[in-house]
Image: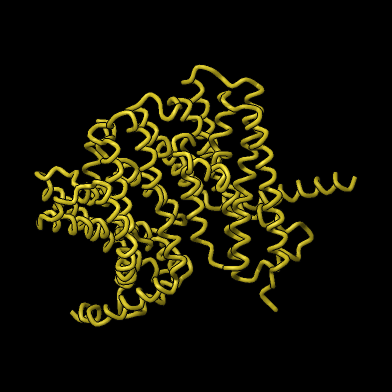
Length: 268
Length: 268
């Protein structure tokens, strides 16, 4: 219980520090925003594909709305903890973090959450453009859909963060955790709906994509946001998303504990 | 006579640098294996967007499926060279500048740009290279015709220019690091812009096409060698591409010497 009390007392300060960091390193922050340009490439590409007719149920306006939505969700749910973990583990600075009364992973999480207000600021004009160019906004005024969207966004953020924690913790054993993350990201790009809506996957691959965690990190929130999600199975999908969150959380906790034992055994 | 012995000396130096990288990489054989496996799966992921697009359409902006596959194959080839030979060395320069150890490189009796560019190689990217060559062979097999010797020669020359332009772009980014030490983000930005090169340039609208021909010469990198191999490139465009690439390399060399001139070492 004292750990929780520590956390609650430290939270405002940590969030304040995180926010100050983002403001101080504004240039870096904006460059990170600019690196998320893949949805815009895909927007142009798929509009070219749909020039002479819709692809499935996606015509040019649907693709525009979808990829602007993907940009929004990606910017809000993005994490960078894998690089922090990799650096701290390889350079031994994790030992300093472990000495603090707060769990290192919670400290990383606080830093990430602190950056979200700035990201929402950056994302707002994109959302405005999305709904101005004809994306459906009506469905979001329904409180249950809005709640579902916010829940799916939170779930997506957690899945991305926890996946990075899982792969980053492997840096305690493996030299090239970053290469593993590269591979994870490459698969994620294909199966999550980032590169194209997963409806467009070949029929053999589609059921696999709907079960794996990748779609729940991005595709689900995007489809709810732009009104392309089938309302009937909405809460089932949210439940499945949070089931994956629970699975990742447990795995991360177990892996971290195993990692601590190894760190201690080798003298930090 | 002097020039001949100089180039032999630099060739021997290159051999030494490559051997050092190779032996230090082979120390971690498991990493080598893991890297090779990752390379193969990444190749599948690189091709997936193409599979989805051409599952729905026969032509994309005037390019058929095998023709677009040639562009993707060249993209994978360039990415292998970029990630294996260009980026690792040049990223090391940023560390040198930050730690002040660039002075040790500058004291050595060989050209600084050469030493800096050949410092580190990632040998397991050879798997990437072989995979992309396999992709190219597959594409031409599907096309049903092979490039003539003249087309092959032009394509190879343009590919060499593409590598030169890629390297020059990196050198320009590194020159920035002499002034503003934090360029790690710029490398990610660079990679994310390079990702546009997997598609033939005619997919993009005209203003974007102009951007990618004259500002970020992505057209030079994948579309023009592909067009040469497919016999779609006129001699004027080929000459322009070659000349432009060489001019760009000269610009990068000039920028490097100027940046080095402004470099004040770590110990004042």
